[in-house]
Image 1 (cartoon, helix red, strand yellow):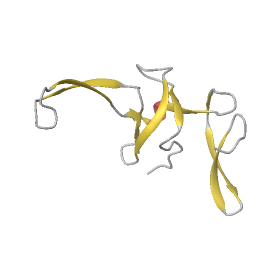
Image 2 (cartoon, rainbow, N blue to C red; image 1 turned 180 degrees about the horizontal axis):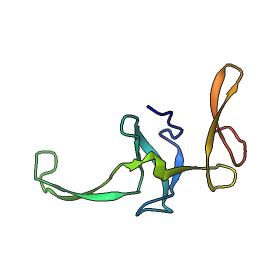
Image 3 (tube, helix red, strand yellow; image 1 turned 60 degrees about the horizontal axis):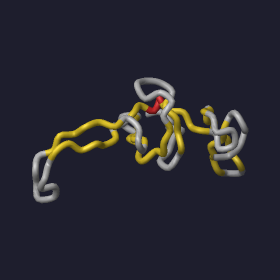
Image 4 (tube, rainbow, N blue to C red; image 1 turned 180 degrees about the vertical axis):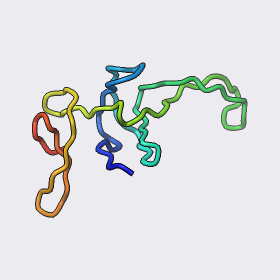
Length: 104
């Protein structure tokens, strides 16, 4: 398993695929499948049957997972896509932006 550099709560941009250029906040990350769910990006329509929880049924829009390789973290300083590095400060490992060298 690879070390994922994107975590839930990060602001990311999509760099490849149908939704290229879209930005959003990471809701969750699936470490085994290397996929993330980004808020408001990669929306799919799901047809649901009527149930006690949803008596009307119908079509529901929800986010589908996107592969981590198609996402890039947005640098908080320049507001552009950046690569993420890992360095040690004292005895802790921290993530940093390679564009601005700022700790994330």
